[in-house]
Length: 151
Image: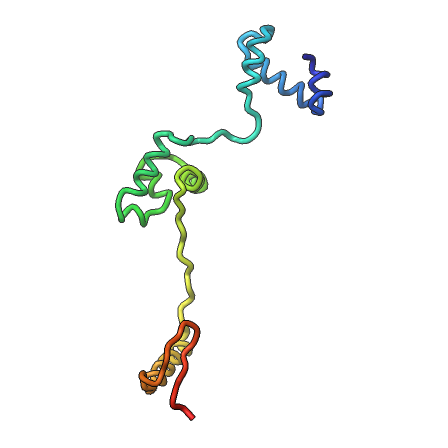
């Protein structure tokens, strides 16, 4: 099949087909051997990076096993696991490994702002008011609380 037929059949640019053929012929042991070129074309992978740590690799299973080892390790971050196992990987790579291969997620708790002095005083005042109410006159429900015997 000529490059022109490939361009017409698959509606590709001629330059794209020429680039692929040039790269495949460079990989083939014998560029004139059709079967060798086709074999290289079948294994040809263009675009994106291949996975650094594939599913089931030693590194991937070591990370998973370490993360589930005991309560101390449950509190560690992904980079700490990688450092302990001795795997050089970026944090985003580690997240991808844990999320896609092992379905393990780490969530950081949201940081809440500290209460101001005025808010602390308001809480104390509210607590004093609530302590003065007789508990047997209040009915607790899921949505609200209601007082009885009030005018």
